[in-house]
Amino acid sequence: MQEDPKWPGYFPDGCPSESARPPQCTVYRFIKQNAPTPTDFVPHKIIYPRSIWGSNECQACGLSVYSTLEGAQKAFEALPATKRFVAVARGCITPESGKILETPTRGNSSHITWWVYEGVDPCAMFNIA
Image (cartoon, rainbow, N blue to C red; front, side, top):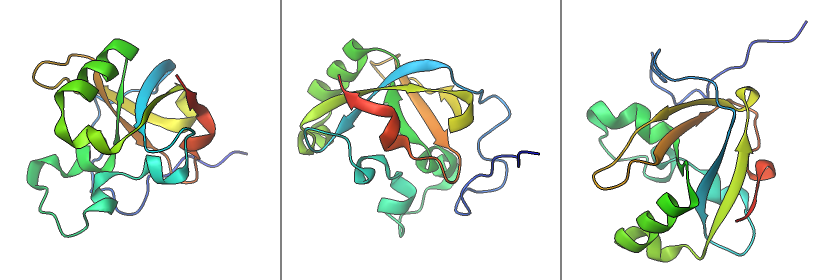
């Protein structure tokens, strides 16, 4: 019998919300080298442990991905923080990997938050787009 997937211990109670759903889609994510590495898949909650997230804490536990390559490229051009990235990777994510929720940003409707189950290696699901 297979164990139910678990969320990482740093997720707050009720995260992700009931409106998040299992994914079965192709998504795009910024990466810092010419191939995905584990450091490309660390959520802001871990990168910035002293930040006060308030109502955004759950979203900070997830990873930002985009539903279209065009959406990722648009964000790359518009956001100054993306200048530390060098490429966009494409990944096929499945229900076994976690849950997603469309979380559009101002000017970019393709943004998705992806909450990854504990023990899942997101790096293995991605290649250069």
